[in-house]
Each structure stands twice: as C-alpha cells, then as structure tokens.
Length: 317
Ligand SMILES: Cc1cc(C(=O)NCC(F)(F)F)no1
Ligand SMILES: [Zn+2]
Image 1 (cartoon, rainbow, N blue to C red):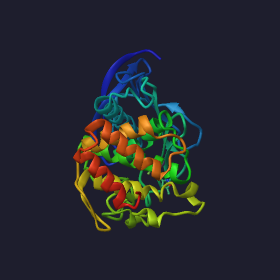
Image 2 (image 1 turned 180 degrees about the horizontal axis):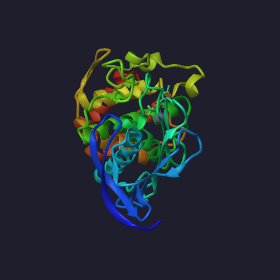
Image 3 (image 1 turned 90 degrees about the horizontal axis):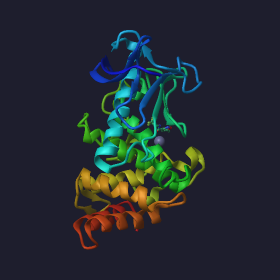
C-alpha cells in the first residue's frame, strides 16, 4: 500500500467532529495512520464476523456519514491511546516495539461487545438499546488495547483472580486515558456508549462497583464459574482500590489519602509490567503494587502508605 500521509476530518459515533491521519492514493483515503509506531489500520467487517475484514477506504477524505462514525472513533481513539502509552509510560505501542494497531468495526449484527482478539481490537455496533457502536468510547478502546499491553507483559491468565486483575488493569488504564485527554473524565466504564436511553448509568462503576452488582470488598468476591470465574465481577475489588488510591476516601472504615491520577498510573504500570505474572492472585497483586510504589517513591513515602491503605480498604491484606 503506497500513498501520501494526510489528515482527514470526520464525525464520531456521538456526532463529534475530529481530525485523524489517513493515507491517500489514487484509490482514495484509507484509515491508515503511519505516524504512530508501525501504523494504525482500521478495517470494516461489514456486519459479518470475519476479521480483519476490508481496510477502510473512503472516497473523499471526509468521514461524515453515519456508517463512518464507528471507524472514525476506532481510528482516532487508537491514536490517542497509542500516545498515552508512548508519552506517559515510554511504551511504543502495546508491545513496546511499535506493533501495528489493527481495529475492526461493524463486527457482527447488533453485537453488544468489544474485545481484543489476541492480535487486534474488534468492535460491535450494539443493538441500539444496550449499546451504541462500542468504539464511540475512549475508555472502551483503551480498555481493549490494555489487554494487549497485559498480554505482552504480565500475561495474566484470563480466569479467576488473575483474570479479575487482568480486567481491572483494562478498566484502570481505560479510565486514566479518558482523564489524560480530559474526555468527559469519570471513574465509570463505557458510560458514553451504554444504554443511550438511560442517563447516568454505565457498564461498570469503579467508584462504586456495587452499582452494577459487583463486589467492592474481597470478602464479597464471586467464587462461581460464570464469566470465566468472575473476571468482570471481581475486577470491582481492584477497581475500587484504584479509585481510592487516586481520589482518596474512606471505605468500610479505612481511610485512604489520594495520590492523584498520574502517580496512580505510574504505580499500576510498573506493577503490570515489572511484577505481575500469569498466575498472580489478589495477595500477590497487593505485594507487587507496594513494591512498585516503593521503587518509585520510597518505602516510607505517603504513596506507599496509600497503596497499603487502598488494598486494606477492599479487604486484601
Ligand atoms: C459482562 C461483560 C462485560 C464485558 C466488557 O467489559 N466488555 C468490554 C467493553 F469494553 F465492552 F466494556 N464483556 O462482557
Ligand atoms: Zn476486558
């Protein structure tokens, strides 16, 4: 594929206008961004389930059609998430080696989910009631791309406690990316693409996991076999701890002094990439996070004290 690097404009899923990088040649404008790593490539599944599908080609480098919105956001938000890991954590793409970022949109029919396939991001259109096209939320895209970071670092097994930590890392960095770009930042997950007819709800809440029925304390963990042993359920325990570490608060009588988003991100990034292993459980997660904070701020630092308090507040001692 040859051509010239260009900048296009278009409307995202929620009708917001944005610019992004494309490659233009005699065929037209491709959703190819050659300015980041080995490139960002966005594809169209055309509502079938073959991936990656067809590399997205537009006729005039203007992406304002309703059908274009999911692709516009998948492409632009992948670029923003790339920038977060490069600029904030000096990680070049999800593997640290500039790996291509491949996304497919319009996957399936009324498909209410998004996922990292092991080699690419995939986004459904939603059924219009539970979800609108899922690439329309920056926290969702960063959630999926963080699975790729996890898989190329700690490689946490996607079941039981290691799977819950895997899921929580994706929610944590999804939220931190949303804050980094000040994109209607909050400590909820997927709120921008979830239940368009219901205001104020979200797929999950990190601030209060019980709002979606998930535990906010280790004593309330799910021990069944559903959801791969509760990976999207027991993530609430870690999500609440992360919320407390960044923002502070008192939870089940334990008070945590907040340390802010940037230090929280540095501690979790170092924990994920230097200490966690495929079989890490919540107990090892506590020890690892304390060690990462110790490396960064010192054993007697306020940051280490807050990490200890945050894990204690959710019953991981
Ligand atoms: C239950 C359940 C939750 C999820 C989930 O988190 N999907 C990723 C997201 F990005 F769409 F949120 N999937 O099944
Ligand atoms: Zn996930």
